Each structure stands twice: as structure tokens, then as C-alpha cells.
Length: 496
Image (cartoon, rainbow, N blue to C red):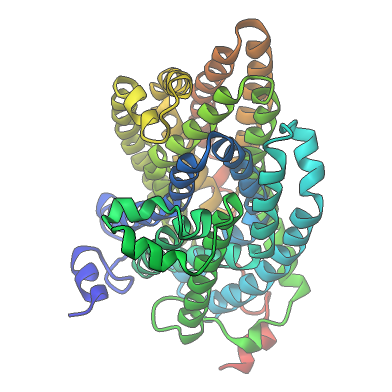
């Protein structure tokens, strides 16, 4: 029995997983559980960097606190292409339009490559200017620039792998991407300490119990490590291999939707459809990333310990919100497939069920984080000032986690229905119109505590807005799928 056979015995294969009939709970759970694991593995990339760089120096830890939001910003700008591709594949799959789903996947890969090359060039050239706007200190800015230049060069592989995940999810296969992600994460964890510390003073030797002789043999290479730049090299290298594997799976088509070289020539008309659906999704993702970057402008006014605490806190959030993100992606897929199958009421029930599960589940996690805030932060640093500030951040925000789950659940439903603009508006309102001004005022009036309080207040308001907007029912109006006479008919026909 292969690893995939064992996993399919636990989860459900796409052929067995019917998202358009039967109950809501089981298919959503079977779809979302591998997504939770995949997203957890994704966050492990960032946690590994945070952990090893925390061992390197507090300055490196502060630098990665600046670098991560900039990375998310680049990914968010390109996010719309993957969301549009996932929605189109999901709706065509639900409508039993296999060839249209394959054409959508092929075009999505093409446009993702184009977008990532453009954004990678932008990130490489303008990283210094962005750091100047964010107010990074003289000790931190060069380190962030080193990290971002390497990451920008490898953006095509990083984002390409995200597109692979999205297309497979739209089809309903969440197990295969999970396996590929696992291999990539293991490779990154192995490479990280070597590229950061080199061989002579590598703390991994101590964790593995290697003696002086083994360490000396490794040290003969003379490689002294590249610090924070090494963390970027490890990430890009492991993602490049994962993207190559993902492309192989998509071209073969044995697991999920298939792509074809003959359908990858850029189709301007189809590109416009990807733009119409994807641009609001990019705005949504950009709003989330931009809010973190804008908050860094405020955080940069505080001591380095507050900057580091902010970085650790946002990393902890990324782990805690994994169920919300995974369920949101699962809801997006189920909504898209049910709309494609013209089962609108089932799509609505999926959204309400997901929102209830996340509201209860994340509220429970929030209580745990509230009670264990200091030990959680202490995992990443031994600096007592960072631990105290980070624990305060978590205590202010943890009891509002359930509202974040509600907002994520309904946002996934809006995206699956092709109403990505609604999800974008909710994100902009919550993060830009509410959170940032509150954080600015709070920082001036009561210091860093005011910033942490702004997180909590905006999260509660965002959850309420998402629930009320979904109840209005405007997402029911129309869908985004098109028949073969409306998109790529000639290209589709060529492969029939």
C-alpha cells in the first residue's frame, strides 16, 4: 500500500467525495481536513524561519518581522489569479464541464507565471524604497533587503506552487497537494539551519546530538551561512522542487484537473475573465497584507522588542487561523461546485454550517491562547521583554478569534460564488477603514496596547459585517461559469 492509499483510507479521494449531494458536514470535513494540514505545513515554512532566525539574533528576528508582511503583500497581489482559477475549475467541475475546467486550469497556470515574473521584478527593484516607507531601522533594513531579493527571484516557483494547490482544490482533490507540501516542508526544515548558520556553528548539530568530530567534518566545507538570506534560499529552493512536482501532476492529469500545452497560449478574452474574478480577490488579499505593512509603520515607532513581539504574534495567528482558512477554502470549493450544479440552497447551507463550526472552534482555541499566552511566545524567544509584550498582544486578541472564523467562512462563500468583490469590500472595511485608524489613534493615546486593542475591535466588527452581508443574499445573483461557445472553444475543440 502506498502513502497515498493509506491517506485515502483516512480521507476521501475526489472520485469518492461528492460535494453536490448528500449531507453538508462530511464532505466539507473531508475536503477541509487535508486543507488544514496543508495550511499547517505552509505555516511551518514561516515558523521554521522564525525559530532558526530567533536563535541567530534578535535583529534577524526583527528583520523577518518586516520581511513576512512584504512577502504576503507580493503573494496577495498575485492571489487573484489562483482564486479565479480555483473558482472556475470548481464551477465547471460541478457542472460536469471537464474540458472547460481543463482550459481554465491551463490558462490560470499561464497567467500566474506572467504575473509572478512582473511582481518578482517589482519586489527585487523596489524593496529598498518600500523599506524606507516602512521606517525600518538601519540595522534591520539591509537584512530585510537581502531576504526579499532572493524571495523575489524565486517568486515564480513560490506562487506557481500556490496555483497548483488552488487548482487541485477547485477540482476537489486536497490530498495530493497535502502530500507534495509535506515533502517540501521537510526539505525546507532540513535546509534552513544549514543556509542560515553554515556548518561550523550550526545549532542543529546540538539538537541532533552530533559530536565534535561530525561537526568538524561538516565545517570543512568552509560555508559560514548566509543568515536571513539563507532562510530565503532554503524556502525558494524547496518551493521550486514542489512546483516542478506540481506541474508534473497537472500535466499528467492522473490526480485531479489536467492542463495542456496547447491551451496555455495566453487567451486575452479569458484573461479578462480571470481579471474580473481575480482582481477583487487580489484586493482582498492585498488589503490583508497591506494592513500588516501599514501597521509596521506604527510598530516601527516602538522599541525593537515590540517589533519582534508583533512578528511572533502574527505568526501565532497564522497557526490559530489555519482552521478558518482551510474551512474558507473548503466552503469556496463546495459553494463553487454547487453553484455550477445549480444547487444554490445547498451552497447557502454550506456557508452557515462552516460559520457555526468556526465560531465555536476558534473561540475555544482563543480561550486556550489567552491562558497560555506567555509560554506560547516563549517558544520563539528568550528575551523577557518580547515575551511580555507578545503575551499582551495575544491576550487582547485571542477572545475575538471566533469572529474571525465567521468572517473567513462567509468570505469563502462569496469567492466560491464568484462574488469576490464583496469579500474584498469586507476585508478593506475591516482592515483599512477600521483597524488601521484605531491602531494609529491607540498607539498615540495608550502605546502598543492601543495597537493590540485595534486588532480585537476590528475583528469583531468584521465578523458581524460578513454575517449580515451574506444574509442579504446578493451573492445568489448569477454565477461566473461559461459554456464552451463563450471561452476557448477553438482551443478546447483542438484536443477533442
